[in-house]
Image (tube, rainbow, N blue to C red; front, side):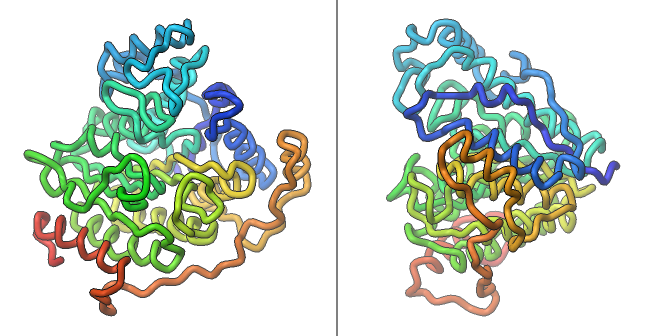
Length: 390
């Protein structure tokens, strides 16, 4: 297996553009790639593109009639009437929608193929992580569910156990739905509580169905949860489940919208804690996953200058075994790029100045604490189903 990581990138992903008034501004992707290059991480990783996902690949998760509908409105956005979730406020139709969405899907599938074949130890597609798309409908800014497609491709290639970890502020509902009854896939989502945030799913009692009972894991975090609580929740659930499941491949989704500056949600996580979880996913891949196979995806994130590029540049550096030091000064060339593109001043360092820490679950818990109540609810709902102590 190559020790070099792969970064899946194609400039055409910036064509995934819902319009100037939509919060998912594709500038977040181009600025991230600009920061990756400014830190010369494109020398530490192999930058590759991949073919656009064809219908046979998309059908691993999506219904053909839905793919056909996306293709129709892609040719004529004015024809979108809300059917299949296309042409809504969340998912406005735009020319080239099918091609841009299928390219992002193809990059994530290509990442999965690279790590499974051993061409790369790890692979990153920060343009991916579009985890809300359902088999037959767009949802939550997501047209094709590239995260689910990456998992499905790993299964198609012969993987018998794939773990999916989602730390976006929103529940990874589309990926959970795709593998609800499949015991080969363990989905773990840490997200803001469904009482206070879209998509209003991801309750701890959602544990999978049929043969997949116990294969869906949801940690619903109270609004306002910050670094210590977020990290405590992650480490109180994820490592123990991975140690038990022993996946043959790990797919992770790193939405940056948990950040305290994100305008669409209500957690209070710092860039430094996001980096800490990225590093933990890397370590867990090497500790519990056959061959260390790790596919890392982007996701949400709507503080498109101050947060997203820094967070995902850290992710690329970690995956490429060339981590960017948090205290490092952001290259002036990139700050000039930020100003030229957005007329905003970019951040000065790769840190929010926090030192992430947490109390391990094994040290005890407080039954009156809202965060600990959330963790305990998840452990009680899922762990016994997997033969583990809650």
